[in-house]
Length: 292
Image 1 (tube, rainbow, N blue to C red):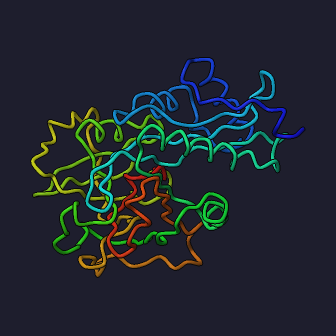
Image 2 (cartoon, rainbow, N blue to C red):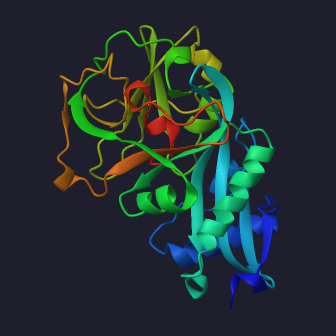
């Protein structure tokens, strides 16, 4: 079957569509159990920055492929703007090899630009990065740091967000939503002038760790529903810090040979004012994508 015989339509968020998406994810990723109706409702509908943007490919009433981005707010080269985070993609095994992901992504980005989003970012592994770069016009910004350390991050004085090339802008509502992930909650603490976040560890995984400036946000503003479990002094940092302020003396880099799949930050601008991001001026953590 050629792609000309398929019907392409924007993603939906009704109960029937969510069930169809769950079935597709189960067919494509049988070892993953996170794509429950509750998780998809949280991710696609409850995000305070906006509902999911994406496209589906239908063969009659059969869902052949699905691609979704979710809205976010970020500082991009001096402006606080709405952006998209590239997330879920799945093509049913019966329809793979037909370029459906590329078609759905192109339609999604066209729709995102029309809706006023400034660009789209994502985190891609080594296998998927070349496709994003060659076929979809993404910039490979920089490989993410993956480090194990003890205690808080010892970065120096960070530049204002408006001086960075990219940094997520987290409102209290967005942080409450991010921490309420029904598949794997994120826990918050206040330490001095910083908000400290860690993902619930499971099995032998180290807790992923991130810090944000509190900027007057109180823990009560974040309405933490669950008591935070004890935070291990041994922690995992996945992300980037601006070169001018980065200091990892208490966090050792994980050798590439020991990483399951090295991760890359990728970006595609929809705005003529931004041709690309400066890799030296990026602030990024596990909070900003979907690893946890």
